[in-house]
Length: 150
Image (cartoon, rainbow, N blue to C red; front, side, top):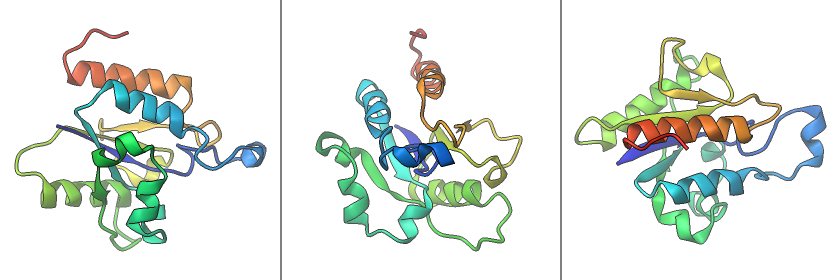
């Protein structure tokens, strides 16, 4: 198993003045296409949306064939926690993994992670999960699963 921790804003839809013409989750189909190519990858929601949207609604954002790959959401820690998103992810891993689980986070806010962390793939918040980030994710997953880069 490989766990991918997913942010929404700035990842599945860009966050910029020019992105207001885009639909929310407009980049979700690109992300889901990657998931379909890597059936061992499970997803945990790390987005702040988990704090305001019920789980059933979060699940409903994803295509039906992928919903069983969503394992849940990270716990919510105090906003003053250093490297907040990483701390929430590490707590989730500690609570749910019986062995060391390889993971990666996709996010657009570097200050939420320890700068030394190699487990984060950053999106430019104005472009989100674009072709370049997709390529980087596929390369990392290929390495993790021992595949040749495409």
